[in-house]
Amino acid sequence: MPETFPPVSDGWSTAEATYEGFPLYLRRPTEIDYSQSARFPVQVVIEHSLEKVRSSGLPEPEYNRSLLDFDGVVVELFEESGDGYAVLVETFAGKRIYYFYVSSETDVQSRFDTLAGNFPEHELALEQRSDSDWSFLKRYAEGFGFLPVSE
Image 1: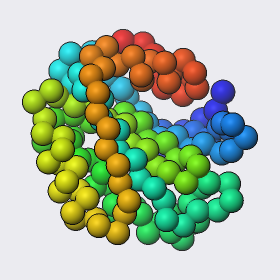
Image 2: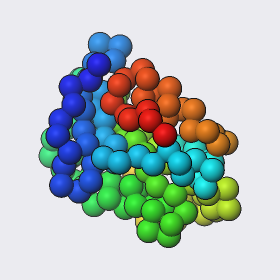
Image 3: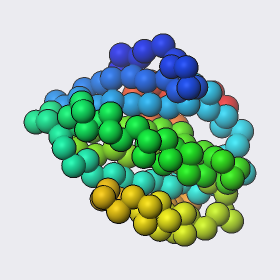
Image 4: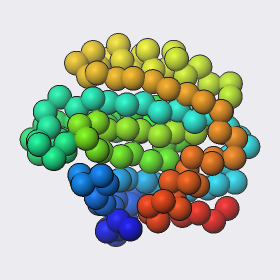
């Protein structure tokens, strides 16, 4: 069970856990609306390979601070247009992984290509899959106890 911290002012909650002997940092929106699963049935995962990490796999503090603007752009990638929203960000083993749920009409590849083109200094990877009942998020919630599981 992760140690959970109070919600932060920007509408996100954070937690820290240990997984496979390494620190795992988690962020999620304070409110997750599971009733949106029919509207946003596609899970999108954007993986950012962190450039400067400590032996623990976590980013070096100064480097991590330098990622604030980039992080904000990624988290808002689908939300500003109403095409979906970020539901989880995890930092573990030299990577920061952003999880989203989006509409099936969203041109995910085009958004990703624009993001990667605007930030060529970052090594990014994209995955997308159907997850109309948000089963990944529910399993994650049960496993870590950090995400709300009620619908």
